[in-house]
Length: 246
Image (tube, rainbow, N blue to C red; front, side):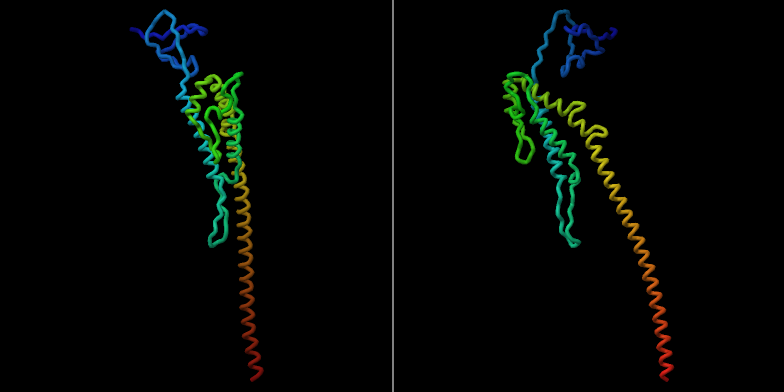
């Protein structure tokens, strides 16, 4: 039999055709598998996947925690005592604030996020089980999240969407830092420019030192020649004095 496109009628959209029985581009987050043809109406019930939502939120919180830990581990300044004296060893992020600003922006987005549904029973992320630890990282209580979603799923969705809009959209916090010529690129360019300036200064210092070294070499060479001449003159003078005394 000649293969035919799948045809379905969706209320509000009209007739839709697709080249296969898999339809995943009509309703956000929903994939339809067409199993058999029929003329009667079909009702589809969509339920919240609380377990998957909890898993995804947990992954987001852990990603934020990883960023916080990485920032702390690489922003250290270590004092080192050795035979050459005392030196400071700087972490790779010790001279930059871009990581701290990014993390602070995400913190603020979490604290400012709120449900827009009037009379909602879940309005803050703390009520979704997200709390701050003493070291600045975040803790996620899955059981508390499940309880909050069961009480008011729409409010929970509104709250998470509020945070996602601030952080994950095309103009969100993450994009502002990671996009081309964003805050991270700007910080890297500034750091590279500073390194070039320092390298130029070092090159000029090395050139000046080399020129001074060459000058002193010539001075000492001239001094050595002069001293040699003085020694010869001293020897000749001693000989003359000895001849006069005889």
